[in-house]
Amino acid sequence: MHLKRSLNEEQQFKLNITDFESAGDRGKSGYTFNIALENGKVTNNISGSAVARDLYEALKDDEAIKAMLLNRSIKISVGKSFILSIKNNHISAFK
Image (cartoon, rainbow, N blue to C red; front, side, top):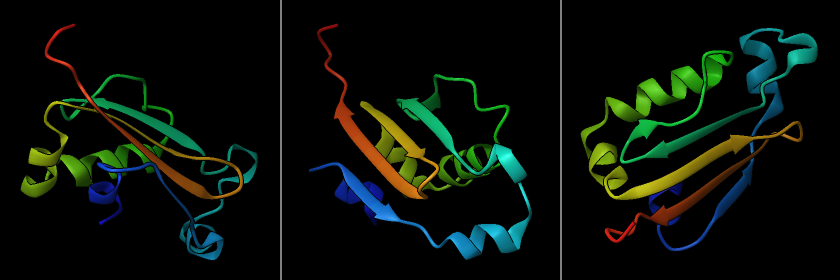
C-alpha cells in the first residue's frame, strides 16, 4: 500500500520497534538499511543486512509489485529512529 502511494509522493512512517526487537537482537548494528532498486533490480549492496535481503525477496516474488517497479527508481530505507522511507522516481527513457 505504501509502495503504491509512493508513486505520487514520498512515504514515511514509524515502524514498531518492539516487533524488530522480538525478532532478534541486532545489538549495535541495529536494523538500519537502504535498498536502491531500478526496474525491480537491486543496485546497491544489501548483503550485510538480513532485513534488506528479506524485504527484497518478498518484493520480487510479488507479481503486482514487480509490475509496479518497472521503469521506476526506488529507494527504501530504515534509519536508527525506525522510520521507513520510500522514495519513488520514474526512470526516463531519455537517459
